[in-house]
Image 1 (cartoon, rainbow, N blue to C red):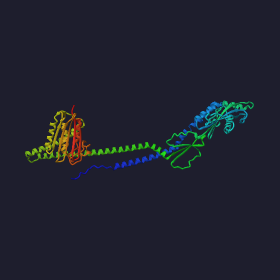
Image 2 (cartoon, one colour):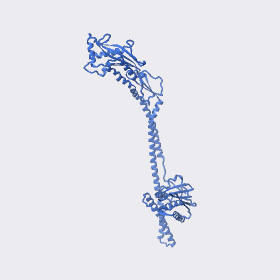
Image 3 (cartoon, rainbow, N blue to C red):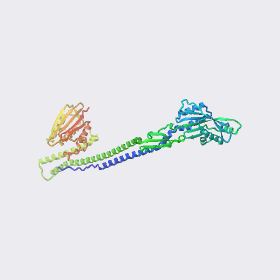
Image 4 (cartoon, rainbow, N blue to C red):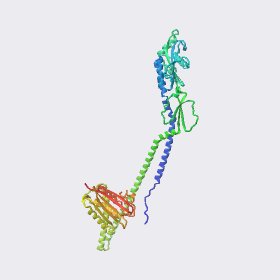
Length: 547
Protein backbone atom coordinates (compact mmCIF):
# COMPACT_ATOMS: atom_id res chain seq x y z
CA UNK A 1 0.00 0.00 0.00
CA UNK A 2 1.42 3.36 -0.96
CA UNK A 3 2.14 5.59 1.98
CA UNK A 4 -0.03 8.68 2.08
CA UNK A 5 1.91 11.90 1.67
CA UNK A 6 0.95 14.60 4.11
CA UNK A 7 0.36 17.99 2.59
CA UNK A 8 0.79 19.77 5.94
CA UNK A 9 4.21 20.45 7.35
CA UNK A 10 5.24 22.16 10.59
CA UNK A 11 8.23 24.46 10.25
CA UNK A 12 9.71 25.48 13.59
CA UNK A 13 12.72 27.37 12.19
CA UNK A 14 11.11 30.81 12.49
CA UNK A 15 9.94 30.10 16.03
CA UNK A 16 13.40 28.83 16.99
CA UNK A 17 15.06 31.94 15.52
CA UNK A 18 12.58 34.17 17.37
CA UNK A 19 13.25 32.27 20.60
CA UNK A 20 17.02 32.57 20.16
CA UNK A 21 16.84 36.30 19.38
CA UNK A 22 14.53 36.94 22.34
CA UNK A 23 16.84 34.99 24.64
CA UNK A 24 19.91 36.85 23.33
CA UNK A 25 18.23 40.22 23.89
CA UNK A 26 17.20 39.05 27.34
CA UNK A 27 20.78 38.06 28.25
CA UNK A 28 22.18 41.32 26.82
CA UNK A 29 19.56 43.30 28.78
CA UNK A 30 20.55 41.46 31.97
CA UNK A 31 24.26 42.20 31.47
CA UNK A 32 23.79 45.83 30.41
CA UNK A 33 21.34 46.60 33.20
CA UNK A 34 23.67 45.02 35.78
CA UNK A 35 26.64 47.07 34.55
CA UNK A 36 24.56 50.29 34.49
CA UNK A 37 23.34 49.56 38.02
CA UNK A 38 26.94 49.06 39.15
CA UNK A 39 28.02 52.37 37.59
CA UNK A 40 25.02 54.15 39.08
CA UNK A 41 25.81 52.83 42.58
CA UNK A 42 29.46 53.81 42.18
CA UNK A 43 28.40 57.29 41.04
CA UNK A 44 26.17 57.60 44.09
CA UNK A 45 29.11 56.54 46.27
CA UNK A 46 30.97 59.68 45.18
CA UNK A 47 27.97 62.04 45.12
CA UNK A 48 25.90 61.09 48.17
CA UNK A 49 28.73 61.98 50.58
CA UNK A 50 27.29 65.53 50.67
CA UNK A 51 24.13 64.13 52.29
CA UNK A 52 26.26 62.52 54.99
CA UNK A 53 28.18 65.77 55.48
CA UNK A 54 24.98 67.79 55.85
CA UNK A 55 23.55 65.42 58.42
CA UNK A 56 26.84 65.12 60.30
CA UNK A 57 27.37 68.88 60.71
CA UNK A 58 23.70 69.51 61.42
CA UNK A 59 24.38 69.56 65.17
CA UNK A 60 27.36 71.89 64.62
CA UNK A 61 25.19 74.30 62.59
CA UNK A 62 22.57 74.22 65.32
CA UNK A 63 25.26 74.97 67.89
CA UNK A 64 26.79 77.77 65.87
CA UNK A 65 23.56 79.47 64.73
CA UNK A 66 21.44 79.06 67.84
CA UNK A 67 23.30 78.07 70.97
CA UNK A 68 26.29 80.39 70.58
CA UNK A 69 24.14 83.42 69.85
CA UNK A 70 22.06 82.62 72.95
CA UNK A 71 24.76 84.46 74.92
CA UNK A 72 23.49 87.77 73.53
CA UNK A 73 20.18 87.30 75.37
CA UNK A 74 22.05 87.94 78.66
CA UNK A 75 23.14 91.40 77.36
CA UNK A 76 26.56 90.92 78.89
CA UNK A 77 25.30 90.34 82.44
CA UNK A 78 26.19 86.67 82.82
CA UNK A 79 26.99 85.54 86.33
CA UNK A 80 29.17 82.57 87.12
CA UNK A 81 26.04 80.59 88.01
CA UNK A 82 24.42 81.44 84.66
CA UNK A 83 27.64 80.66 82.83
CA UNK A 84 27.90 77.31 84.59
CA UNK A 85 24.30 76.40 83.72
CA UNK A 86 24.82 77.48 80.12
CA UNK A 87 28.05 75.47 79.71
CA UNK A 88 26.42 72.38 81.21
CA UNK A 89 23.65 72.50 78.60
CA UNK A 90 26.24 72.96 75.84
CA UNK A 91 28.25 69.96 77.04
CA UNK A 92 25.06 67.91 77.28
CA UNK A 93 23.72 68.75 73.82
CA UNK A 94 26.94 69.00 71.80
CA UNK A 95 29.49 66.24 72.51
CA UNK A 96 32.10 67.80 70.21
CA UNK A 97 32.56 70.77 72.63
CA UNK A 98 35.12 69.63 75.20
CA UNK A 99 36.24 72.90 76.87
CA UNK A 100 34.81 76.42 77.33
CA UNK A 101 36.41 79.66 78.56
CA UNK A 102 34.14 82.36 79.97
CA UNK A 103 35.56 85.90 80.07
CA UNK A 104 33.91 88.32 82.49
CA UNK A 105 34.69 91.62 80.70
CA UNK A 106 34.55 95.32 81.61
CA UNK A 107 34.25 97.92 78.85
CA UNK A 108 34.74 101.64 79.60
CA UNK A 109 37.43 104.25 80.38
CA UNK A 110 39.05 102.15 83.12
CA UNK A 111 42.72 101.56 83.79
CA UNK A 112 44.53 98.42 82.67
CA UNK A 113 42.62 98.33 79.49
CA UNK A 114 43.13 97.54 75.80
CA UNK A 115 42.46 100.94 74.20
CA UNK A 116 41.78 102.45 70.85
CA UNK A 117 42.11 106.08 69.70
CA UNK A 118 39.70 107.42 72.31
CA UNK A 119 39.62 106.66 76.01
CA UNK A 120 37.44 103.54 75.62
CA UNK A 121 39.08 100.27 76.69
CA UNK A 122 38.32 96.62 77.47
CA UNK A 123 39.72 94.35 80.14
CA UNK A 124 39.06 90.82 81.41
CA UNK A 125 38.15 90.99 85.08
CA UNK A 126 38.14 87.21 85.40
CA UNK A 127 38.37 84.12 83.24
CA UNK A 128 36.49 80.91 84.08
CA UNK A 129 37.33 77.58 82.54
CA UNK A 130 34.85 74.68 82.16
CA UNK A 131 35.97 71.21 81.16
CA UNK A 132 33.89 68.23 80.14
CA UNK A 133 36.12 65.85 82.11
CA UNK A 134 35.20 67.38 85.47
CA UNK A 135 32.18 65.72 87.06
CA UNK A 136 30.96 68.80 88.96
CA UNK A 137 31.81 71.21 86.13
CA UNK A 138 32.75 73.85 88.70
CA UNK A 139 34.23 77.15 87.46
CA UNK A 140 37.89 77.97 87.93
CA UNK A 141 39.25 81.46 88.04
CA UNK A 142 42.27 81.49 85.78
CA UNK A 143 43.56 85.04 85.58
CA UNK A 144 46.91 83.72 84.48
CA UNK A 145 47.89 80.67 82.53
CA UNK A 146 45.53 81.11 79.61
CA UNK A 147 46.38 82.20 76.08
CA UNK A 148 45.33 85.88 75.77
CA UNK A 149 45.45 85.83 71.97
CA UNK A 150 41.74 85.12 71.51
CA UNK A 151 40.79 87.79 74.04
CA UNK A 152 43.09 90.42 72.48
CA UNK A 153 41.80 89.81 68.95
CA UNK A 154 38.16 89.95 70.02
CA UNK A 155 38.79 93.05 72.13
CA UNK A 156 40.39 94.92 69.25
CA UNK A 157 37.55 94.02 66.86
CA UNK A 158 34.92 95.06 69.38
CA UNK A 159 36.52 98.47 70.14
CA UNK A 160 37.00 99.21 66.43
CA UNK A 161 33.36 98.35 65.83
CA UNK A 162 32.23 100.81 68.54
CA UNK A 163 34.39 103.61 67.14
CA UNK A 164 33.36 103.27 63.51
CA UNK A 165 29.74 102.14 63.66
CA UNK A 166 26.99 104.57 62.71
CA UNK A 167 24.28 104.26 65.34
CA UNK A 168 21.68 105.66 62.96
CA UNK A 169 21.75 102.48 60.87
CA UNK A 170 21.37 98.81 61.69
CA UNK A 171 24.54 96.76 61.34
CA UNK A 172 24.65 94.22 58.56
CA UNK A 173 25.05 90.49 59.18
CA UNK A 174 28.59 90.67 57.80
CA UNK A 175 29.58 93.42 60.24
CA UNK A 176 28.07 91.51 63.16
CA UNK A 177 29.76 88.24 62.16
CA UNK A 178 33.18 89.83 61.61
CA UNK A 179 32.99 91.69 64.94
CA UNK A 180 31.37 89.34 67.44
CA UNK A 181 32.47 85.99 66.03
CA UNK A 182 35.96 84.62 65.63
CA UNK A 183 36.06 81.18 63.99
CA UNK A 184 39.39 79.39 63.95
CA UNK A 185 40.35 75.72 63.58
CA UNK A 186 38.95 73.81 66.56
CA UNK A 187 37.56 76.83 68.38
CA UNK A 188 34.98 79.59 68.23
CA UNK A 189 35.07 82.85 70.17
CA UNK A 190 32.00 84.98 70.66
CA UNK A 191 31.01 88.18 72.47
CA UNK A 192 27.43 89.26 72.96
CA UNK A 193 26.14 91.53 70.17
CA UNK A 194 25.80 95.17 71.18
CA UNK A 195 22.63 97.10 70.54
CA UNK A 196 22.68 100.61 69.03
CA UNK A 197 21.84 102.09 72.47
CA UNK A 198 24.83 100.24 74.01
CA UNK A 199 27.10 101.59 71.29
CA UNK A 200 25.91 105.17 71.94
CA UNK A 201 26.61 104.78 75.65
CA UNK A 202 30.10 103.36 75.01
CA UNK A 203 30.89 106.19 72.54
CA UNK A 204 29.92 108.77 75.17
CA UNK A 205 32.03 107.06 77.84
CA UNK A 206 35.07 107.05 75.55
CA UNK A 207 34.77 110.80 74.90
CA UNK A 208 34.94 111.79 78.60
CA UNK A 209 38.40 110.98 80.00
CA UNK A 210 37.67 112.53 83.37
CA UNK A 211 34.72 110.31 84.07
CA UNK A 212 35.26 106.75 85.27
CA UNK A 213 32.54 104.48 83.91
CA UNK A 214 32.24 100.95 82.61
CA UNK A 215 29.77 98.31 81.61
CA UNK A 216 29.81 94.50 81.70
CA UNK A 217 30.42 92.36 78.62
CA UNK A 218 30.65 88.57 78.16
CA UNK A 219 32.90 86.53 75.93
CA UNK A 220 33.08 82.77 75.43
CA UNK A 221 35.64 80.65 73.65
CA UNK A 222 34.49 77.15 72.74
CA UNK A 223 37.15 74.51 72.11
CA UNK A 224 35.93 71.81 69.71
CA UNK A 225 37.12 68.26 69.05
CA UNK A 226 36.31 66.99 65.55
CA UNK A 227 36.86 63.39 66.63
CA UNK A 228 33.88 63.74 68.96
CA UNK A 229 31.64 64.80 66.10
CA UNK A 230 28.95 62.15 65.62
CA UNK A 231 29.01 60.88 62.04
CA UNK A 232 25.46 60.37 60.77
CA UNK A 233 25.68 57.78 57.99
CA UNK A 234 22.39 58.37 56.15
CA UNK A 235 23.48 56.05 53.34
CA UNK A 236 24.64 52.85 55.04
CA UNK A 237 23.90 51.00 51.80
CA UNK A 238 26.78 52.93 50.16
CA UNK A 239 29.28 53.59 52.91
CA UNK A 240 30.68 50.70 54.90
CA UNK A 241 32.90 52.87 57.07
CA UNK A 242 33.04 56.65 57.67
CA UNK A 243 35.66 58.26 59.92
CA UNK A 244 36.89 61.74 60.79
CA UNK A 245 40.48 62.17 59.65
CA UNK A 246 42.95 65.07 59.41
CA UNK A 247 43.07 66.81 56.05
CA UNK A 248 46.60 65.47 55.47
CA UNK A 249 45.52 61.86 56.07
CA UNK A 250 45.90 59.53 53.13
CA UNK A 251 45.77 55.75 53.14
CA UNK A 252 49.16 54.46 52.02
CA UNK A 253 48.05 51.01 50.93
CA UNK A 254 46.65 51.09 47.42
CA UNK A 255 43.94 48.47 47.76
CA UNK A 256 42.01 47.93 44.52
CA UNK A 257 39.26 46.18 46.48
CA UNK A 258 38.31 49.45 48.20
CA UNK A 259 36.31 52.45 47.05
CA UNK A 260 37.47 55.63 48.82
CA UNK A 261 36.25 59.22 48.78
CA UNK A 262 36.40 62.21 51.13
CA UNK A 263 34.82 65.58 51.83
CA UNK A 264 36.27 68.45 53.97
CA UNK A 265 34.50 69.60 57.11
CA UNK A 266 33.59 73.30 57.25
CA UNK A 267 34.37 76.25 59.58
CA UNK A 268 35.89 75.29 62.94
CA UNK A 269 36.51 71.73 61.69
CA UNK A 270 38.35 72.88 58.54
CA UNK A 271 41.50 70.92 59.45
CA UNK A 272 39.53 67.67 59.21
CA UNK A 273 37.57 65.69 56.66
CA UNK A 274 35.07 62.87 56.45
CA UNK A 275 36.77 59.80 55.07
CA UNK A 276 34.49 57.29 53.28
CA UNK A 277 35.52 53.70 52.63
CA UNK A 278 33.65 50.68 51.23
CA UNK A 279 34.83 47.27 50.10
CA UNK A 280 34.03 45.90 46.64
CA UNK A 281 32.02 43.05 48.15
CA UNK A 282 30.00 45.56 50.19
CA UNK A 283 29.24 47.59 47.07
CA UNK A 284 28.43 44.49 45.04
CA UNK A 285 25.85 43.52 47.64
CA UNK A 286 24.17 46.92 47.15
CA UNK A 287 24.37 46.55 43.37
CA UNK A 288 22.66 43.15 43.60
CA UNK A 289 20.01 44.55 45.95
CA UNK A 290 19.14 47.34 43.50
CA UNK A 291 19.49 45.07 40.50
CA UNK A 292 17.08 42.45 41.84
CA UNK A 293 13.85 44.40 40.98
CA UNK A 294 15.26 45.12 37.50
CA UNK A 295 16.07 41.43 37.12
CA UNK A 296 12.53 40.46 38.13
CA UNK A 297 11.04 42.97 35.68
CA UNK A 298 13.23 41.67 32.85
CA UNK A 299 12.38 38.05 33.68
CA UNK A 300 8.66 38.88 33.79
CA UNK A 301 8.96 40.73 30.47
CA UNK A 302 10.89 37.81 28.97
CA UNK A 303 8.26 35.33 30.16
CA UNK A 304 5.58 37.68 28.85
CA UNK A 305 7.22 37.66 25.41
CA UNK A 306 7.51 33.88 25.52
CA UNK A 307 3.85 33.57 26.44
CA UNK A 308 2.90 35.91 23.58
CA UNK A 309 5.06 33.86 21.23
CA UNK A 310 3.49 30.66 22.49
CA UNK A 311 -0.01 32.09 22.09
CA UNK A 312 0.81 33.18 18.54
CA UNK A 313 2.21 29.73 17.81
CA UNK A 314 -0.80 28.04 19.37
CA UNK A 315 -3.16 30.27 17.43
CA UNK A 316 -1.35 29.50 14.18
CA UNK A 317 -1.28 25.82 15.07
CA UNK A 318 -5.01 25.85 15.82
CA UNK A 319 -5.67 27.65 12.55
CA UNK A 320 -3.63 25.05 10.69
CA UNK A 321 -5.55 22.28 12.41
CA UNK A 322 -8.85 23.97 11.62
CA UNK A 323 -7.78 24.38 8.02
CA UNK A 324 -6.81 20.71 7.92
CA UNK A 325 -10.12 19.71 9.50
CA UNK A 326 -12.06 21.81 7.02
CA UNK A 327 -10.01 20.41 4.16
CA UNK A 328 -10.51 16.83 5.34
CA UNK A 329 -14.18 17.49 6.02
CA UNK A 330 -14.80 18.84 2.53
CA UNK A 331 -12.74 16.06 1.01
CA UNK A 332 -14.46 13.27 2.96
CA UNK A 333 -17.88 14.86 2.79
CA UNK A 334 -17.49 15.17 -0.97
CA UNK A 335 -16.50 11.52 -1.08
CA UNK A 336 -19.47 10.54 1.10
CA UNK A 337 -21.82 12.36 -1.30
CA UNK A 338 -20.00 11.34 -4.43
CA UNK A 339 -20.26 7.59 -3.82
CA UNK A 340 -24.07 7.37 -3.40
CA UNK A 341 -24.60 10.00 -6.12
CA UNK A 342 -22.45 7.95 -8.51
CA UNK A 343 -24.32 4.79 -7.62
CA UNK A 344 -27.69 6.55 -8.04
CA UNK A 345 -26.57 7.92 -11.40
CA UNK A 346 -25.51 4.48 -12.63
CA UNK A 347 -28.72 2.86 -11.39
CA UNK A 348 -30.79 5.66 -12.95
CA UNK A 349 -28.95 5.33 -16.26
CA UNK A 350 -29.63 1.61 -16.33
CA UNK A 351 -33.29 2.14 -15.52
CA UNK A 352 -33.71 4.83 -18.19
CA UNK A 353 -31.64 3.03 -20.80
CA UNK A 354 -32.89 1.41 -23.99
CA UNK A 355 -32.16 -2.09 -22.81
CA UNK A 356 -35.06 -4.02 -21.45
CA UNK A 357 -34.68 -5.01 -17.79
CA UNK A 358 -36.10 -7.95 -16.02
CA UNK A 359 -38.30 -7.57 -12.95
CA UNK A 360 -35.45 -8.78 -10.81
CA UNK A 361 -33.08 -6.15 -12.23
CA UNK A 362 -35.60 -3.33 -11.74
CA UNK A 363 -36.09 -4.35 -8.12
CA UNK A 364 -32.35 -4.53 -7.65
CA UNK A 365 -31.80 -1.02 -9.05
CA UNK A 366 -34.76 0.27 -7.05
CA UNK A 367 -33.30 -1.14 -3.86
CA UNK A 368 -29.93 0.43 -4.70
CA UNK A 369 -31.57 3.80 -5.24
CA UNK A 370 -33.44 3.56 -1.93
CA UNK A 371 -30.31 2.53 -0.01
CA UNK A 372 -28.13 5.28 -1.46
CA UNK A 373 -30.89 7.84 -0.96
CA UNK A 374 -31.14 6.70 2.67
CA UNK A 375 -27.37 7.24 3.04
CA UNK A 376 -27.64 10.75 1.72
CA UNK A 377 -30.65 11.43 3.88
CA UNK A 378 -28.89 10.05 6.96
CA UNK A 379 -25.83 12.22 6.33
CA UNK A 380 -27.92 15.35 5.85
CA UNK A 381 -30.05 14.54 8.90
CA UNK A 382 -26.96 14.13 11.01
CA UNK A 383 -25.59 17.52 9.96
CA UNK A 384 -28.98 19.16 10.50
CA UNK A 385 -29.40 17.54 13.93
CA UNK A 386 -25.87 18.58 14.92
CA UNK A 387 -26.67 22.18 14.03
CA UNK A 388 -29.93 22.05 15.97
CA UNK A 389 -28.17 20.62 19.00
CA UNK A 390 -25.49 23.34 18.98
CA UNK A 391 -28.16 26.03 18.66
CA UNK A 392 -30.38 24.38 21.32
CA UNK A 393 -33.24 24.49 18.85
CA UNK A 394 -34.17 20.81 18.98
CA UNK A 395 -37.11 19.82 21.14
CA UNK A 396 -37.16 16.76 23.42
CA UNK A 397 -40.20 14.46 23.43
CA UNK A 398 -39.72 12.24 26.45
CA UNK A 399 -41.75 9.06 26.76
CA UNK A 400 -41.50 5.93 28.83
CA UNK A 401 -39.66 3.15 27.03
CA UNK A 402 -38.79 -0.45 27.77
CA UNK A 403 -35.00 -0.41 27.48
CA UNK A 404 -34.74 -4.14 26.91
CA UNK A 405 -37.19 -4.17 23.98
CA UNK A 406 -35.83 -0.89 22.62
CA UNK A 407 -32.25 -2.13 22.67
CA UNK A 408 -33.09 -5.56 21.23
CA UNK A 409 -34.70 -3.93 18.19
CA UNK A 410 -31.45 -2.09 17.42
CA UNK A 411 -29.42 -5.27 18.05
CA UNK A 412 -31.57 -7.21 15.60
CA UNK A 413 -31.43 -4.44 13.03
CA UNK A 414 -27.63 -4.36 13.14
CA UNK A 415 -27.41 -8.14 12.96
CA UNK A 416 -29.52 -8.04 9.81
CA UNK A 417 -27.47 -5.19 8.39
CA UNK A 418 -24.12 -6.74 9.39
CA UNK A 419 -24.47 -10.55 9.62
CA UNK A 420 -20.83 -10.88 10.79
CA UNK A 421 -21.44 -8.50 13.76
CA UNK A 422 -21.57 -10.47 17.06
CA UNK A 423 -23.65 -8.38 19.55
CA UNK A 424 -24.49 -9.49 23.09
CA UNK A 425 -26.82 -7.70 25.54
CA UNK A 426 -27.05 -7.62 29.36
CA UNK A 427 -29.62 -5.54 31.22
CA UNK A 428 -29.80 -5.38 35.05
CA UNK A 429 -32.00 -3.53 37.50
CA UNK A 430 -33.45 -0.87 35.21
CA UNK A 431 -36.51 1.05 36.41
CA UNK A 432 -39.08 2.60 34.07
CA UNK A 433 -37.08 5.03 31.95
CA UNK A 434 -38.28 8.24 30.31
CA UNK A 435 -36.29 9.63 27.38
CA UNK A 436 -36.66 10.84 23.80
CA UNK A 437 -36.40 7.55 21.85
CA UNK A 438 -35.08 9.29 18.73
CA UNK A 439 -32.14 10.82 20.64
CA UNK A 440 -31.37 7.56 22.43
CA UNK A 441 -31.62 5.72 19.11
CA UNK A 442 -29.10 8.15 17.59
CA UNK A 443 -26.67 7.39 20.44
CA UNK A 444 -27.11 3.63 19.84
CA UNK A 445 -26.73 4.08 16.10
CA UNK A 446 -23.43 6.00 16.31
CA UNK A 447 -21.76 3.87 18.99
CA UNK A 448 -22.76 0.59 17.33
CA UNK A 449 -21.69 1.82 13.88
CA UNK A 450 -18.31 2.86 15.35
CA UNK A 451 -17.88 -0.53 17.04
CA UNK A 452 -18.43 -2.34 13.75
CA UNK A 453 -16.44 0.06 11.60
CA UNK A 454 -13.31 0.11 13.79
CA UNK A 455 -13.04 -3.61 14.43
CA UNK A 456 -10.87 -6.14 12.68
CA UNK A 457 -12.64 -7.93 9.79
CA UNK A 458 -12.82 -11.27 11.59
CA UNK A 459 -13.33 -9.95 15.13
CA UNK A 460 -16.38 -7.73 15.06
CA UNK A 461 -17.76 -8.08 18.57
CA UNK A 462 -19.79 -5.77 20.79
CA UNK A 463 -21.22 -6.22 24.28
CA UNK A 464 -23.92 -3.83 25.44
CA UNK A 465 -24.47 -3.69 29.21
CA UNK A 466 -27.19 -1.57 30.77
CA UNK A 467 -27.21 -1.12 34.56
CA UNK A 468 -29.72 0.82 36.62
CA UNK A 469 -28.27 2.80 39.50
CA UNK A 470 -29.96 4.94 42.13
CA UNK A 471 -30.17 8.08 40.01
CA UNK A 472 -28.73 7.09 36.65
CA UNK A 473 -28.86 4.51 33.92
CA UNK A 474 -25.41 3.41 32.74
CA UNK A 475 -24.91 2.18 29.16
CA UNK A 476 -21.59 0.38 28.56
CA UNK A 477 -20.53 -0.44 24.98
CA UNK A 478 -17.50 -2.78 24.95
CA UNK A 479 -15.92 -3.77 21.63
CA UNK A 480 -12.89 -5.80 20.57
CA UNK A 481 -11.79 -3.29 17.96
CA UNK A 482 -8.52 -1.67 17.04
CA UNK A 483 -8.61 0.67 20.06
CA UNK A 484 -7.50 4.27 20.39
CA UNK A 485 -4.11 5.69 21.32
CA UNK A 486 -4.03 7.39 24.73
CA UNK A 487 -2.98 10.71 23.21
CA UNK A 488 -6.06 10.70 20.96
CA UNK A 489 -8.68 10.09 23.67
CA UNK A 490 -9.11 13.80 24.35
CA UNK A 491 -9.77 14.58 20.69
CA UNK A 492 -12.17 11.90 19.47
CA UNK A 493 -15.26 13.86 20.60
CA UNK A 494 -14.22 16.95 18.63
CA UNK A 495 -16.17 17.87 15.54
CA UNK A 496 -14.52 16.86 12.24
CA UNK A 497 -11.64 15.16 14.09
CA UNK A 498 -10.54 11.81 12.69
CA UNK A 499 -8.06 9.39 14.20
CA UNK A 500 -5.58 8.44 11.50
CA UNK A 501 -5.92 4.71 10.79
CA UNK A 502 -6.59 2.31 7.93
CA UNK A 503 -10.34 2.20 8.57
CA UNK A 504 -11.25 5.85 8.04
CA UNK A 505 -9.13 7.01 5.17
CA UNK A 506 -12.09 7.48 2.90
CA UNK A 507 -15.18 6.82 4.95
CA UNK A 508 -15.58 9.34 7.76
CA UNK A 509 -16.17 13.05 8.21
CA UNK A 510 -15.48 13.02 11.93
CA UNK A 511 -19.02 13.71 13.09
CA UNK A 512 -20.17 10.45 14.68
CA UNK A 513 -18.65 10.65 18.18
CA UNK A 514 -18.93 14.47 18.28
CA UNK A 515 -22.65 14.13 17.48
CA UNK A 516 -22.98 11.40 20.11
CA UNK A 517 -21.38 13.59 22.79
CA UNK A 518 -23.61 16.53 21.88
CA UNK A 519 -26.68 14.28 22.23
CA UNK A 520 -25.62 12.96 25.63
CA UNK A 521 -24.77 16.44 26.91
CA UNK A 522 -28.04 17.83 25.56
CA UNK A 523 -30.10 15.36 27.63
CA UNK A 524 -28.02 16.06 30.76
CA UNK A 525 -25.80 12.98 30.63
CA UNK A 526 -22.12 12.18 30.41
CA UNK A 527 -20.01 10.06 28.07
CA UNK A 528 -16.56 8.60 28.80
CA UNK A 529 -14.14 6.37 26.94
CA UNK A 530 -11.42 3.95 27.96
CA UNK A 531 -9.36 2.24 25.29
CA UNK A 532 -6.23 0.21 24.64
CA UNK A 533 -4.72 -0.15 21.17
CA UNK A 534 -5.46 -3.54 19.54
CA UNK A 535 -7.55 -4.63 22.53
CA UNK A 536 -10.71 -2.59 22.14
CA UNK A 537 -12.63 0.35 23.55
CA UNK A 538 -15.24 0.86 26.26
CA UNK A 539 -17.71 3.73 25.83
CA UNK A 540 -19.72 4.53 28.97
CA UNK A 541 -22.85 6.67 28.72
CA UNK A 542 -24.49 7.87 31.95
CA UNK A 543 -28.03 9.27 31.63
CA UNK A 544 -29.96 10.46 34.71
CA UNK A 545 -33.52 9.39 35.48
CA UNK A 546 -36.05 12.11 34.85
CA UNK A 547 -37.52 13.52 38.07
